[in-house]
Structure formats: C-alpha cells, structure tokens
Length: 227
Image (tube, rainbow, N blue to C red):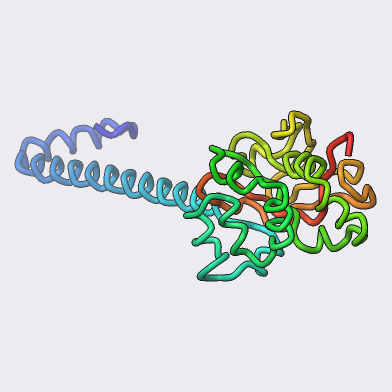
C-alpha cells in the first residue's frame, strides 16, 4: 500500500474499486514486479559502469608519465612494450635515452646483477644528466669501477615502487638512502643529493615497466653521501 495518506472518501472509493476489479491486482503486481526488475537492472548497470571506470583508472595508473616519455621509441627496440618484456639492463640498452647509463652499467659489470634482480626500482639518469657532468669528472668516474659501482647502486631501490609509493626515504642497494619528494606525476630529489649539487633531480619519464623493475628516468646523476 502506498504511504500517501488517503481521505475517508478516497478510502471508500478505493475499497469499492477493489471489490469490483479484483483482476487489477494482477496487473498492479506485474507493474510492481516490472518496476523492481527495472530498478535491479539499473543498479546492476551502475555497478558495471563503476567497475569499468575503476578498471580504466587502474589501467591508466600503470602508464608511463612525463614529458621525456615522448623521446622513447613508440614501437620496436627501446619502446615501452619491448622494455616491459625484458630485464632492466637489457631493456635500457635498447632505449636511446639511456645509452650513457648502459655504458656505465657495463663498465661496472652490473648488467647481470641488475638483470637477475627481483622487483627493483631504478632511478635512471638520462643522457643529458651525464652530459651535464664535466667530461674529465665523468671519464674519471667511468674509469673508477668501485666508485662507479657505488654510484650506480645508489640509483637502485629494493622493491617495485608504484608512483603512489615513490615519495619518502627509500633504501638503495648500496645500503644508504635517497629521499624523494612529490606525488602524482611530479617527483624531485633535492640538489644536495645529486652529483653536481646544483639543481634538483626531476623525474622526467616515470613508471616505465620492465620485466623485473619499475624505472623512473631522471635528469640528474645522484651521488651517495660519501661520493
């Protein structure tokens, strides 16, 4: 029965109508059943739309971000799709943005170490980050294997960090820490943690996936505290 309050006359009229037209009940019941089905269908549709929206958001959160991502090949060797199926050192070797880093990793004999590591995060300096280091200093670093190894290990964090877990004080494979600030798609590392100590390091292409690592390409070379 509807909750709307009926007057006495309306109640009598409704009672008389009920007595004369019993068959109308079946029709009303059918209508109510139809309404119920319609409501259930609408609710199911809303739930499906919500789930689809959630899945779309989740899918979007796995995509690389940053202005320098446009420098990465769109297909073939070095592309995001190809990198995602390769271990991190191998994946970097095909990416033209990271050729100097690959040279450094090779000089430090860390290719196998990085490729065989499980679930790591790599803060990967792009070529311009190395180019900003005076050539004599860079050449000296590349020739000093123990020091180069320490610097590169300082760029690697244990565990695969999604963007929403990247900020904070993170422990590196060297055993020291790097502090990352920011959120969303904007992350920085303070200048005093970089090799040149002249400008903050910025993530310029982040959330790049490889077979065993999540990579954040940065525009400065980082330095361990003792470097």
